[in-house]
Amino acid sequence: MSEFQPADPDFERRVPSSFARQGIMSHIGAEMIEVGPGHCEIRLPYGEHVSQQHGFFHGGIVATIADSAAGYAGFSLMPTGAGVLTVEFKINLVAPADGELLIARGSVVRPGRTLTVSRAEVSAMKNGSSRVCAILQQTLMTITGRPDVVG
Image (cartoon, rainbow, N blue to C red; front, top):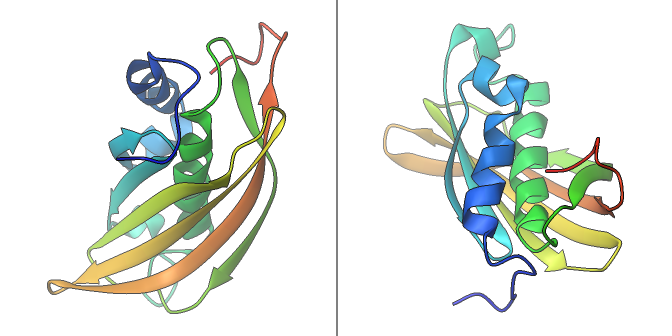
């Protein structure tokens, strides 16, 4: 059971709905596999369209799914009608993203009324083994009172 209580009891519908509106996630083939209060998991299968010149997942793609996993973990705790924007993140690419699948697991470190700190760990799956390839920490801003920035 999560240590966090979502402000919106409908977060399990609202969060995947927001994810589905992200064109980049559809474009690269990423899927939200799980969402709960303060956590989120996104998976991305390997393809040449997400690779770099050595055949690994591109670092920008790793950062993209890490940002979304951590961001949606934070968004799961935000109130109905809120929007979420990343205002800052730092990522450490700790190993080549070499594998058939990336798994980004986001979690909230500290929720706040305006600012939330979250993190994500990205693992590359290869031949049945998992290896952490990136660690991200970010700051999110809860946006309220802006009908053009909801979800």
